[in-house]
Length: 289
Length: 118
Image (cartoon, rainbow over all chains, first blue to last red; front, side):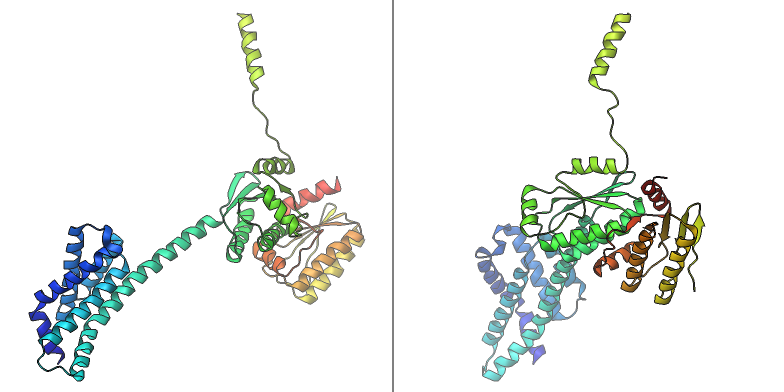
Protein backbone atom coordinates (compact mmCIF):
# COMPACT_ATOMS: atom_id res chain seq x y z
CA UNK A 1 0.00 0.00 0.00
CA UNK A 2 2.78 2.37 1.03
CA UNK A 3 4.66 1.96 -2.22
CA UNK A 4 1.45 2.54 -4.12
CA UNK A 5 0.94 5.91 -2.40
CA UNK A 6 4.55 6.71 -3.00
CA UNK A 7 4.06 6.05 -6.68
CA UNK A 8 1.03 8.34 -6.82
CA UNK A 9 2.93 11.12 -5.10
CA UNK A 10 6.06 10.79 -7.20
CA UNK A 11 4.17 10.63 -10.46
CA UNK A 12 2.18 13.73 -9.61
CA UNK A 13 4.94 15.57 -7.84
CA UNK A 14 4.47 18.67 -9.99
CA UNK A 15 0.85 19.10 -8.94
CA UNK A 16 1.64 18.53 -5.29
CA UNK A 17 4.52 20.97 -5.40
CA UNK A 18 2.30 23.59 -7.02
CA UNK A 19 -0.34 23.14 -4.34
CA UNK A 20 2.29 23.23 -1.63
CA UNK A 21 3.95 26.39 -2.93
CA UNK A 22 0.56 28.13 -3.08
CA UNK A 23 -0.19 27.28 0.53
CA UNK A 24 3.27 28.25 1.78
CA UNK A 25 3.09 31.53 -0.11
CA UNK A 26 -0.22 32.24 1.60
CA UNK A 27 1.51 31.66 4.93
CA UNK A 28 4.36 33.93 4.01
CA UNK A 29 2.55 37.25 4.26
CA UNK A 30 0.96 36.58 7.60
CA UNK A 31 4.14 35.34 9.06
CA UNK A 32 7.85 35.53 10.04
CA UNK A 33 9.23 35.34 6.49
CA UNK A 34 7.54 38.49 5.18
CA UNK A 35 10.82 40.40 5.22
CA UNK A 36 12.56 37.86 2.98
CA UNK A 37 12.81 38.65 -0.72
CA UNK A 38 10.60 36.75 -3.21
CA UNK A 39 13.53 35.23 -5.07
CA UNK A 40 15.21 33.83 -2.00
CA UNK A 41 11.90 32.56 -0.71
CA UNK A 42 11.16 30.80 -4.00
CA UNK A 43 14.58 29.22 -4.29
CA UNK A 44 14.48 28.05 -0.70
CA UNK A 45 11.03 26.60 -1.26
CA UNK A 46 12.30 24.73 -4.28
CA UNK A 47 15.20 23.35 -2.34
CA UNK A 48 12.92 22.38 0.52
CA UNK A 49 10.64 20.48 -1.84
CA UNK A 50 13.62 18.75 -3.38
CA UNK A 51 14.80 17.66 0.04
CA UNK A 52 11.37 16.31 0.87
CA UNK A 53 11.06 14.38 -2.39
CA UNK A 54 14.54 12.92 -2.34
CA UNK A 55 13.69 11.72 1.15
CA UNK A 56 10.48 10.08 -0.08
CA UNK A 57 12.36 8.42 -2.94
CA UNK A 58 14.70 7.05 -0.31
CA UNK A 59 17.67 7.29 -2.62
CA UNK A 60 19.59 10.20 -1.14
CA UNK A 61 21.78 9.91 1.96
CA UNK A 62 20.94 12.08 4.95
CA UNK A 63 23.52 14.71 4.09
CA UNK A 64 21.27 16.75 1.83
CA UNK A 65 18.91 17.29 4.73
CA UNK A 66 21.72 18.30 7.05
CA UNK A 67 23.13 20.70 4.47
CA UNK A 68 19.72 22.23 3.97
CA UNK A 69 19.16 22.62 7.72
CA UNK A 70 22.59 24.15 8.16
CA UNK A 71 21.93 26.62 5.37
CA UNK A 72 18.62 27.69 6.90
CA UNK A 73 20.20 28.07 10.34
CA UNK A 74 23.00 30.19 8.92
CA UNK A 75 20.52 32.38 7.09
CA UNK A 76 18.58 32.77 10.34
CA UNK A 77 15.31 31.32 9.08
CA UNK A 78 12.89 30.49 11.85
CA UNK A 79 12.18 26.91 12.82
CA UNK A 80 8.48 27.55 12.26
CA UNK A 81 9.13 27.83 8.51
CA UNK A 82 10.24 24.21 8.47
CA UNK A 83 7.53 22.86 10.72
CA UNK A 84 4.80 24.81 8.94
CA UNK A 85 6.16 23.74 5.55
CA UNK A 86 6.12 20.10 6.51
CA UNK A 87 2.64 20.32 8.03
CA UNK A 88 1.40 21.90 4.81
CA UNK A 89 3.12 19.20 2.81
CA UNK A 90 1.48 16.51 4.85
CA UNK A 91 -1.96 18.07 4.44
CA UNK A 92 -1.55 18.65 0.71
CA UNK A 93 -0.25 15.15 0.06
CA UNK A 94 -3.00 13.49 2.06
CA UNK A 95 -5.63 15.55 0.23
CA UNK A 96 -4.09 14.73 -3.11
CA UNK A 97 -3.83 10.99 -2.53
CA UNK A 98 -7.40 10.86 -1.27
CA UNK A 99 -8.64 12.76 -4.31
CA UNK A 100 -6.89 10.21 -6.55
CA UNK A 101 -8.30 7.16 -4.81
CA UNK A 102 -11.41 5.48 -6.10
CA UNK A 103 -12.84 4.02 -2.94
CA UNK A 104 -12.61 6.13 0.21
CA UNK A 105 -13.49 4.66 3.56
CA UNK A 106 -12.10 5.27 7.03
CA UNK A 107 -9.68 2.36 6.74
CA UNK A 108 -8.21 3.78 3.59
CA UNK A 109 -7.88 7.26 5.07
CA UNK A 110 -6.05 5.89 8.07
CA UNK A 111 -3.67 3.99 5.78
CA UNK A 112 -2.93 7.12 3.79
CA UNK A 113 -2.34 9.14 6.94
CA UNK A 114 -0.03 6.49 8.31
CA UNK A 115 2.20 6.28 5.29
CA UNK A 116 2.40 10.04 4.80
CA UNK A 117 3.26 10.42 8.48
CA UNK A 118 5.98 7.86 8.01
CA UNK A 119 7.59 10.05 5.38
CA UNK A 120 7.19 13.36 7.16
CA UNK A 121 7.85 12.52 10.83
CA UNK A 122 11.55 11.60 10.51
CA UNK A 123 12.10 14.78 8.51
CA UNK A 124 10.53 16.93 11.21
CA UNK A 125 12.44 15.13 13.93
CA UNK A 126 15.77 15.48 12.20
CA UNK A 127 15.31 19.13 11.29
CA UNK A 128 14.18 20.08 14.78
CA UNK A 129 17.16 18.20 16.18
CA UNK A 130 19.50 20.12 13.89
CA UNK A 131 17.98 23.39 15.02
CA UNK A 132 17.96 22.65 18.74
CA UNK A 133 21.47 21.22 18.55
CA UNK A 134 22.60 24.46 17.00
CA UNK A 135 20.91 26.49 19.73
CA UNK A 136 22.35 24.40 22.51
CA UNK A 137 25.75 24.87 20.98
CA UNK A 138 25.33 28.64 20.91
CA UNK A 139 24.11 28.72 24.51
CA UNK A 140 27.02 26.65 25.78
CA UNK A 141 29.52 28.82 23.90
CA UNK A 142 27.96 31.92 25.40
CA UNK A 143 28.06 30.44 28.85
CA UNK A 144 31.75 29.73 28.37
CA UNK A 145 32.40 33.27 27.20
CA UNK A 146 30.47 34.64 30.16
CA UNK A 147 32.44 32.51 32.55
CA UNK A 148 35.70 33.76 31.12
CA UNK A 149 34.51 37.31 31.63
CA UNK A 150 33.00 36.74 35.05
CA UNK A 151 36.02 36.95 37.32
CA UNK A 152 38.98 38.73 35.73
CA UNK A 153 42.04 39.43 37.82
CA UNK A 154 44.44 42.23 36.96
CA UNK A 155 47.86 42.41 38.61
CA UNK A 156 48.36 46.19 38.32
CA UNK A 157 51.51 46.43 40.39
CA UNK A 158 53.78 44.15 42.28
CA UNK A 159 51.77 42.94 45.29
CA UNK A 160 48.60 44.75 44.24
CA UNK A 161 45.84 43.04 42.28
CA UNK A 162 42.46 44.33 41.16
CA UNK A 163 39.35 42.29 40.52
CA UNK A 164 36.67 44.34 38.78
CA UNK A 165 33.23 42.77 39.10
CA UNK A 166 30.50 43.61 36.62
CA UNK A 167 26.96 42.28 36.62
CA UNK A 168 24.83 40.29 38.99
CA UNK A 169 26.54 37.84 41.30
CA UNK A 170 24.83 34.51 41.92
CA UNK A 171 26.03 31.57 43.97
CA UNK A 172 27.74 29.81 41.10
CA UNK A 173 29.56 32.93 40.02
CA UNK A 174 30.49 33.77 43.61
CA UNK A 175 32.18 30.39 43.91
CA UNK A 176 34.03 30.99 40.68
CA UNK A 177 35.07 34.47 41.84
CA UNK A 178 36.40 33.11 45.11
CA UNK A 179 38.42 30.36 43.39
CA UNK A 180 39.87 32.75 40.85
CA UNK A 181 40.63 35.35 43.51
CA UNK A 182 42.50 32.95 45.76
CA UNK A 183 44.42 31.28 42.93
CA UNK A 184 45.33 34.71 41.59
CA UNK A 185 46.55 35.99 44.94
CA UNK A 186 48.88 33.02 45.24
CA UNK A 187 50.03 33.20 41.62
CA UNK A 188 50.76 36.93 41.63
CA UNK A 189 52.00 36.85 45.19
CA UNK A 190 49.80 39.82 46.02
CA UNK A 191 49.61 41.47 49.40
CA UNK A 192 46.51 43.52 48.67
CA UNK A 193 43.50 42.70 46.52
CA UNK A 194 41.05 45.39 45.49
CA UNK A 195 37.58 44.07 44.79
CA UNK A 196 35.74 46.63 42.68
CA UNK A 197 31.94 46.35 42.83
CA UNK A 198 31.16 49.50 40.84
CA UNK A 199 29.54 47.36 38.16
CA UNK A 200 27.45 45.23 40.49
CA UNK A 201 23.90 46.58 40.20
CA UNK A 202 22.41 45.09 43.35
CA UNK A 203 24.05 44.10 46.62
CA UNK A 204 21.66 42.06 48.70
CA UNK A 205 22.38 39.91 51.72
CA UNK A 206 23.42 36.98 49.56
CA UNK A 207 25.89 38.96 47.46
CA UNK A 208 27.27 40.61 50.60
CA UNK A 209 27.64 37.20 52.20
CA UNK A 210 29.62 35.93 49.21
CA UNK A 211 31.84 39.01 49.21
CA UNK A 212 32.50 38.70 52.95
CA UNK A 213 33.35 35.01 52.52
CA UNK A 214 35.77 35.80 49.72
CA UNK A 215 37.41 38.53 51.81
CA UNK A 216 37.72 36.14 54.76
CA UNK A 217 39.31 33.49 52.59
CA UNK A 218 41.74 36.05 51.19
CA UNK A 219 42.69 37.00 54.73
CA UNK A 220 43.25 33.34 55.62
CA UNK A 221 45.75 32.82 52.83
CA UNK A 222 47.62 35.86 54.02
CA UNK A 223 46.56 38.86 51.93
CA UNK A 224 44.31 41.86 52.49
CA UNK A 225 41.07 42.49 50.67
CA UNK A 226 39.76 46.02 50.15
CA UNK A 227 36.23 46.50 48.87
CA UNK A 228 36.02 49.49 46.55
CA UNK A 229 33.39 51.14 44.38
CA UNK A 230 30.63 51.34 46.96
CA UNK A 231 28.00 53.66 45.53
CA UNK A 232 25.71 55.69 47.81
CA UNK A 233 22.71 53.49 47.14
CA UNK A 234 24.74 50.37 47.81
CA UNK A 235 25.94 51.86 51.11
CA UNK A 236 22.32 52.55 52.05
CA UNK A 237 21.20 49.03 51.18
CA UNK A 238 24.04 47.48 53.11
CA UNK A 239 23.26 49.47 56.26
CA UNK A 240 19.50 49.00 55.93
CA UNK A 241 19.94 45.25 55.59
CA UNK A 242 22.13 45.25 58.68
CA UNK A 243 25.12 43.71 56.93
CA UNK A 244 28.33 44.04 58.87
CA UNK A 245 31.25 44.89 56.64
CA UNK A 246 33.36 46.34 59.41
CA UNK A 247 35.93 43.52 59.39
CA UNK A 248 37.60 44.72 56.24
CA UNK A 249 38.29 48.13 54.75
CA UNK A 250 35.90 49.64 52.23
CA UNK A 251 36.42 52.64 49.97
CA UNK A 252 34.11 54.60 47.70
CA UNK A 253 36.29 54.56 44.61
CA UNK A 254 39.01 52.47 43.06
CA UNK A 255 41.38 55.45 43.24
CA UNK A 256 41.04 55.79 47.00
CA UNK A 257 41.36 52.05 47.42
CA UNK A 258 44.51 52.03 45.35
CA UNK A 259 46.03 54.78 47.48
CA UNK A 260 45.25 52.73 50.59
CA UNK A 261 46.77 49.66 48.96
CA UNK A 262 49.94 51.62 48.24
CA UNK A 263 50.06 52.75 51.88
CA UNK A 264 49.70 49.17 53.08
CA UNK A 265 52.58 48.06 50.87
CA UNK A 266 54.66 51.06 52.04
CA UNK A 267 54.73 52.86 48.72
CA UNK A 268 53.51 56.10 47.27
CA UNK A 269 53.25 57.78 43.92
CA UNK A 270 55.63 60.68 43.36
CA UNK A 271 55.43 63.17 40.53
CA UNK A 272 58.72 63.14 38.65
CA UNK A 273 58.76 66.84 37.82
CA UNK A 274 56.26 69.48 38.69
CA UNK A 275 55.41 72.11 36.14
CA UNK A 276 56.66 74.91 38.43
CA UNK A 277 60.06 73.26 38.59
CA UNK A 278 60.14 73.02 34.83
CA UNK A 279 59.33 76.67 34.49
CA UNK A 280 62.00 77.70 37.02
CA UNK A 281 64.59 75.60 35.28
CA UNK A 282 63.76 77.24 32.01
CA UNK A 283 64.03 80.73 33.46
CA UNK A 284 67.32 79.88 35.15
CA UNK A 285 68.81 78.54 31.97
CA UNK A 286 67.68 81.67 30.13
CA UNK A 287 69.38 83.85 32.76
CA UNK A 288 72.63 81.99 32.31
CA UNK A 289 72.63 82.65 28.64
CA UNK B 1 54.16 10.88 64.51
CA UNK B 2 55.52 14.18 65.71
CA UNK B 3 55.78 17.42 63.84
CA UNK B 4 59.31 18.86 64.03
CA UNK B 5 59.67 22.31 65.56
CA UNK B 6 62.76 24.20 64.41
CA UNK B 7 64.39 27.13 66.09
CA UNK B 8 65.61 29.96 63.88
CA UNK B 9 67.30 32.79 65.83
CA UNK B 10 64.60 33.79 68.27
CA UNK B 11 61.71 32.42 66.25
CA UNK B 12 60.20 28.98 66.06
CA UNK B 13 59.57 27.49 62.66
CA UNK B 14 57.06 24.75 62.00
CA UNK B 15 56.41 23.35 58.56
CA UNK B 16 53.57 20.86 58.50
CA UNK B 17 54.30 18.47 55.65
CA UNK B 18 51.82 15.69 56.20
CA UNK B 19 48.12 15.26 56.72
CA UNK B 20 47.56 15.76 60.42
CA UNK B 21 45.24 13.53 62.41
CA UNK B 22 43.67 14.56 65.69
CA UNK B 23 46.27 12.82 67.83
CA UNK B 24 49.17 14.48 66.01
CA UNK B 25 47.46 17.84 66.37
CA UNK B 26 47.10 17.51 70.13
CA UNK B 27 50.68 16.27 70.39
CA UNK B 28 51.83 19.23 68.31
CA UNK B 29 49.96 21.66 70.56
CA UNK B 30 51.70 20.31 73.65
CA UNK B 31 55.11 20.19 71.95
CA UNK B 32 54.88 23.75 70.70
CA UNK B 33 53.80 25.23 74.04
CA UNK B 34 56.55 23.28 75.72
CA UNK B 35 59.11 24.57 73.26
CA UNK B 36 57.90 28.17 73.66
CA UNK B 37 58.23 27.80 77.40
CA UNK B 38 61.75 26.36 77.16
CA UNK B 39 63.17 28.66 74.52
CA UNK B 40 61.38 31.85 75.56
CA UNK B 41 60.75 32.66 71.92
CA UNK B 42 58.62 35.64 70.96
CA UNK B 43 57.52 34.65 67.47
CA UNK B 44 56.23 31.50 65.78
CA UNK B 45 55.60 30.78 62.11
CA UNK B 46 53.43 27.80 61.20
CA UNK B 47 53.70 27.00 57.49
CA UNK B 48 50.77 25.11 55.98
CA UNK B 49 51.85 25.11 52.32
CA UNK B 50 51.76 21.33 51.93
CA UNK B 51 48.52 20.85 53.84
CA UNK B 52 45.67 19.98 51.50
CA UNK B 53 42.93 19.32 54.04
CA UNK B 54 42.06 21.04 57.28
CA UNK B 55 38.95 19.82 59.05
CA UNK B 56 37.07 21.67 61.77
CA UNK B 57 38.94 19.94 64.58
CA UNK B 58 42.39 20.76 63.22
CA UNK B 59 41.21 24.31 62.58
CA UNK B 60 40.06 24.57 66.18
CA UNK B 61 43.38 23.24 67.46
CA UNK B 62 45.27 25.70 65.27
CA UNK B 63 43.11 28.58 66.55
CA UNK B 64 43.66 27.40 70.12
CA UNK B 65 47.41 27.09 69.65
CA UNK B 66 47.52 30.68 68.41
CA UNK B 67 45.56 31.94 71.43
CA UNK B 68 47.60 29.85 73.85
CA UNK B 69 50.91 30.99 72.39
CA UNK B 70 49.66 34.54 72.57
CA UNK B 71 48.97 34.00 76.27
CA UNK B 72 52.54 32.82 76.69
CA UNK B 73 53.80 35.92 74.92
CA UNK B 74 54.62 34.44 71.53
CA UNK B 75 53.08 35.86 68.39
CA UNK B 76 51.98 33.29 65.80
CA UNK B 77 51.66 33.75 62.05
CA UNK B 78 50.02 31.12 59.83
CA UNK B 79 51.50 31.03 56.34
CA UNK B 80 50.84 29.39 53.02
CA UNK B 81 47.22 28.38 53.52
CA UNK B 82 46.08 26.91 50.20
CA UNK B 83 43.08 28.40 48.37
CA UNK B 84 41.08 25.18 48.67
CA UNK B 85 41.78 25.04 52.39
CA UNK B 86 40.78 28.69 52.85
CA UNK B 87 37.52 28.05 51.00
CA UNK B 88 36.72 24.99 53.11
CA UNK B 89 37.41 26.89 56.31
CA UNK B 90 35.18 29.80 55.27
CA UNK B 91 32.46 27.39 54.21
CA UNK B 92 32.66 25.69 57.59
CA UNK B 93 32.21 29.08 59.23
CA UNK B 94 35.71 29.03 60.72
CA UNK B 95 37.16 32.48 60.31
CA UNK B 96 40.17 32.23 62.65
CA UNK B 97 39.61 35.84 63.63
CA UNK B 98 42.54 37.52 65.25
CA UNK B 99 45.02 35.12 63.69
CA UNK B 100 47.76 36.73 61.64
CA UNK B 101 48.32 35.21 58.22
CA UNK B 102 50.85 35.64 55.42
CA UNK B 103 51.28 34.37 51.89
CA UNK B 104 54.49 32.45 52.41
CA UNK B 105 57.20 31.77 54.95
CA UNK B 106 59.27 34.77 53.90
CA UNK B 107 56.44 37.23 54.31
CA UNK B 108 55.43 35.55 57.54
CA UNK B 109 58.87 36.20 58.98
CA UNK B 110 58.78 39.81 57.74
CA UNK B 111 55.39 40.25 59.39
CA UNK B 112 56.64 38.85 62.69
CA UNK B 113 59.66 41.10 62.47
CA UNK B 114 57.47 44.16 61.91
CA UNK B 115 54.99 43.33 64.64
CA UNK B 116 57.56 42.49 67.24
CA UNK B 117 59.60 45.53 66.33
CA UNK B 118 62.92 43.76 66.45
